[in-house]
Structure formats: C-alpha cells, structure tokens
Length: 84
Ligand code: FES
Image (tube, rainbow, N blue to C red):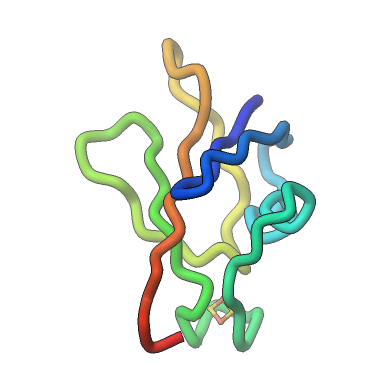
C-alpha cells in the first residue's frame, strides 16, 4: 500500500503493521521523537484514514493500519508543533 506524508507530499510503500516511524524514516521524513515508548507525544501525527475526522496517533507505537476499500493511499500529516 501507499502512504503519503504531508506537508512534504512524499509517497512511499508500506506494509500493514509496519511502525509508522520506520516507514517515515525510510521515506526520508523525520518525525520528532522523544521517549519512543508512547508517553511523551513528541511523535504525534495525524492519520487520514478516510474517516471524517483524522485520527491522532503516536508514530513510535502505531503500526500502519489497513486502508479502507476505495481508498488508494493513507495520508499522514506531520504536525509542526512549535514546542518541539
Ligand atoms: S516518541 Fe514519545 S510518544 Fe513517541
């Protein structure tokens, strides 16, 4: 499946269940990290999985979810959080 990272619009291939942080790194996208255990929220990104509202996830503990039928790619939007 395809994943597109915003705002840079970098698209890469990924397998379901792969850690989103690993996929981003492979695509040359750097997601800020801290604890790598899901507690500090430094790696928070928005996942647009075809629902009305994007899902807020932590890239260091979240695997790539299956895409919905009819959806051609998953979109991940990196926050630009000024505190990080
Ligand atoms: S790096 Fe701390 S929650 Fe992901």
